[in-house]
Every structure is written in C-alpha cells, then in structure tokens.
Image (tube, rainbow, N blue to C red):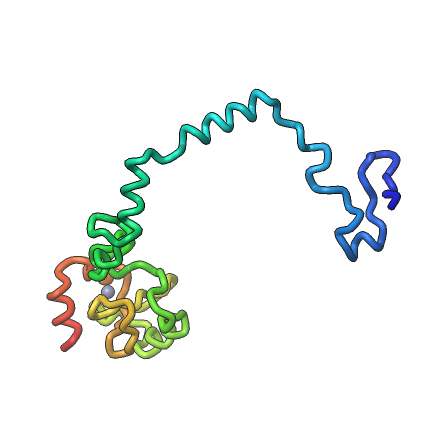
Length: 169
Ligand SMILES: [Zn+2]
C-alpha cells in the first residue's frame, strides 16, 4: 500500500483507512533504530552484566521467598502491624480494608458533628482525621472510629494503651 507523504514535512499522512487499523502505519521506531552507537550499546550490556546478582545473593533471595524467618518477604514478621515498615502510627491514609472508604469517613465526621472528640475543636478548612480506637485499620466498626483534629490525632501516636482505654469509655 502506498503511503502518501506530506511533501513539506516529510511526515506520513494517515489515510482514513489507517485510522481504523494499525495496518499500513509506519512503525513507531521507523528510522530510530540506529540512533545509538555500537559503543553505547556495548556499554549498556556491560552495565547490565555488572548488575547481576551474585550466587550468594541469589541464595539469600531464594531463602526469603520460601518464607525463611530471616527473609523480609516473610509474612509472619508483619503479622503484628506495628512491625510493618509502612505502619505510620494510625495516621496513614492507605486503605487497609475495602470498608475503609471516603464514605465511611464522611459519615463519622457527620456523626461526630465535625468536632474533635478530644479537645472539642471545630473542623475548619482541612477535614479532621478519623481515628481507629483500637489502632486496627481493618476494624471499621463505627464504634471503633472517632473524629480527631490533627494535633489530637498526632498525640495518639504515643501512649497507645492509654488512648485505647480513654476512648473505649
Ligand atoms: Zn483535638
């Protein structure tokens, strides 16, 4: 199939048929294949070789994947979420469970009348945090959720047992 070329730019012009199918379009890398010199390519393959895992490393990775207790992939180690590297003390916005939705947060804010349940401050510009009383992000029972302003929520990062007892009353 003859591809019409725009005479001034040399760019291939697409025919209406070509919009319907990829057939007949010049490949995206047409004319780009050899923009890198042999020298550059050699350098790349050298770098790749240098990045290969050593036999020792391979052994380590294999062990970890099998769930050895020293492996960072071990699930056992993260059963207690406080050991989890991403656990940031209850102020993370990561969805830990599907129930933990914006809708739920909104309903808690409404229930607690947009007021911090600790210092009675009213929510202004930034929405207040919904705190998990038992620090279990998966426990999205409204009984376990309470609205806190940002500074009060930060306080709950320390003395956890104290706050659990405090809010459960
Ligand atoms: Zn507060």
